Image 1 (tube, each protein chain N blue to C red):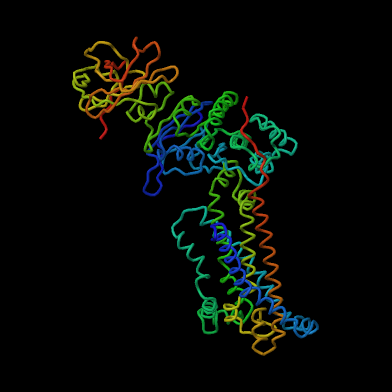
Image 2 (cartoon, rainbow over the protein chains, first blue to last red):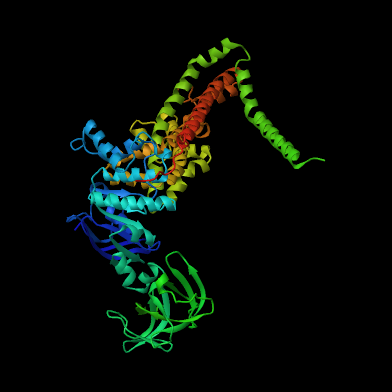
Amino acid sequence: MSIEIRNLRKRFGGFTALHGVDLDIHDGELMALLGPSGCGKTTLLRLIAGLESADAGSIHLHGRDVTALGARHRGVGFVFQHYALFRHMNVFENIAFGLRVRPRATRPREPELRQKVERVIDLVQLGGMAQRFPDQLSGGQRQRVALARALIIEPNVLLLDEPFGALDAQVRRQLRRWLRRLHDELHVTSVFVTHDQDEALDVADRIVLLNHGRIEQIGNAQQLQDRPASSFVGRFLGEINQLPASLAEERISLGDSHWPLPAGSEVKSGAVDLCVRPYDLHWTERAGPSSFPATVTDARWLGGRYRVELDPALAGVPYVTAEWSRTQMPPRELQAGDVVHLQPARYAVFARAG
Amino acid sequence: MIGPDRRYRIARSALILGALSVAGLFLVLPLLIVLSGAIAKGWSLYLASISEPDALAALRLTLTVTAIAVPLNLVFGVVAAWCIAKFEFPGRSALITLIDLPLAVSPVISGLIYVLLFGAQGLLGPWLGEAGFRVIFAVPGIVLATIFVTFPFVARELIPVMQAQGRDHEEAALSLGASGWQTFWRVTLPNIKWGLLYGVILCNARAMGEFGAVSVVSGHIRGKTNTLPLHVEILYNEYQHTAAFAVASLLVLLALLTLVAKTWVEARAHRDRHPDPIVQPDEELP
């Protein structure tokens, strides 16, 4: 196990950033810490790096207890959101920094140091840029210098704080594919913080979803999307329809329609939210006990799928969204005002919030 | 009919003329009077006035005091600015206020504080006197008063610079294995060097020119505890106007050197912040 975190707590004055977090990150894994702002994801990352000290709990890196160790002695590579490159040093010296500050006994000699730096420069594809200063680089290049600078110390784990946050959309997408490939090449255990669910789904092996200083769910993209552990997870990872239903005797009721309670649900009775992804909301021609009627208000072709907005005539639900592929569409062209019957193919229920 | 463009130009010219004449009247004219007064009775008298033993002693004392006060305030200033900019701690805002105290208090009061502390009837004075150590009416008092008065300059220059830079650079250095000293010398100091130099120049200018606080603690002993500004006053009070202007011209010269240094630092700092850009679009990654 690369990173073992037990019951980690952190308060800032009156604000509790983390309430007892437990987390295991495997060797060579690329993990995303995902959550809305203020959820504690950056605090967790900084605690792993030793840039903040924990109030309680423990952190082990590769079996070694580092809880009381400062950032300097943890051997962790940290990439900052705004790069934090040393502006008065050129690319070469920025990358060489981690080697130059070593004690004399372990510091490589100049020729060896040059060789190492040049190898990392090639790795991040910045050949020919060694003499440039940070102000003379583009955002994506600066981010790669920051990455190279962290990699040269051969870190136990690589931590990245919103690594693509300051880049424009196109560069961001490119750089994250590139980071994924680099990770597959190097296999260094990596953790990155993001508030962008697409980024987490696109890059990470597993995702830790945090909210209000607690872990809501850990899993891969499919587990989080299809088997959310809470309505927060459902809502955070992609669009979801929330229908106010009631639950009694293992039966979910919404108007005149009923569905069985899915296995593994935690609620047993009372007011619940029936949560259905747009692509799990299928249509049927005829009314049935497990479908409800809805009037089409808008239908659009989004390239690869239709996105249909419908009015289900339910109190408190102004509209629901369904997404159908070309083959799932009704045989006739849908028009605003058409009535179809919607049937949730897969759904989850959670106790109604508030 | 006057168009808006024309009116704008008239307003601009009027404002520039106004600013220039105020600056000329209150800044340049006195300087010219000092210089012309200094050489009014010929160069030989000028040279004699500034090479007279008491004048040389005053110059030496001013340079000595400056040479002690400025490096000390440099260290204090960096430490104080570091604490305030990089850490949150109880008493932080009190410290910020304290740093500004010397600017808020009249220099004469600053001098009096030291007389009350170290004078013959003061709090620590008798005790120090027994130990054979004189502070008031001696060089140590002048140094202390100068340090007090010039304390804010370095810290005030550095605090905004350090706050703007945040802690990222230091944290990056630490995570790469650098020690505290390595981080300071290799990362923090290069980041703040222009602000620091600018603060030192201002501090230096004030240390050489300080009159009020030093006047209270010095005792005006000619050749011993007179700094340049005090010497100018004595000469003036004794109606030796030419000599007074001559010695004053030394202070003017030091001030002009300060201005040149300040301008140079500002230009360098600006160039560092805005290097020649190499336009660099993000390239395709294979």
